[in-house]
Length: 129
Image (cartoon, rainbow, N blue to C red; front, top):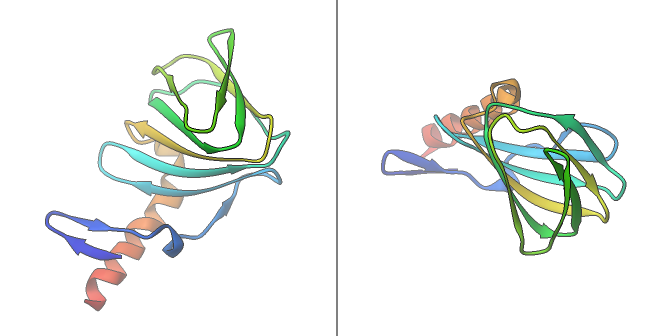
């Protein structure tokens, strides 16, 4: 990680991969008001029906997802983004091994353990420079 005016630059390779389940893992970077997450889902992974305060954008870089948003199903393929409004129930199923980026705003406070490690990586790298 390196410093930038008023911020920092974080390399994904500097972050630990957090195993969420046998089929889902992630890397988390958090700012003050938004959170960016690399998510790896193996085929068959299911993120159960849930909702949260954060608006969510999911960008599928590789793979395919079936996303149920407020009772309606959509397929999200490579190069597509799905928007999930704040407070709306949704679930996700990986129809193939999938690599995605999730952007949340505001930050999902229940995920701050992983993000706190990101902040610590940033502090350590800044002190080294």
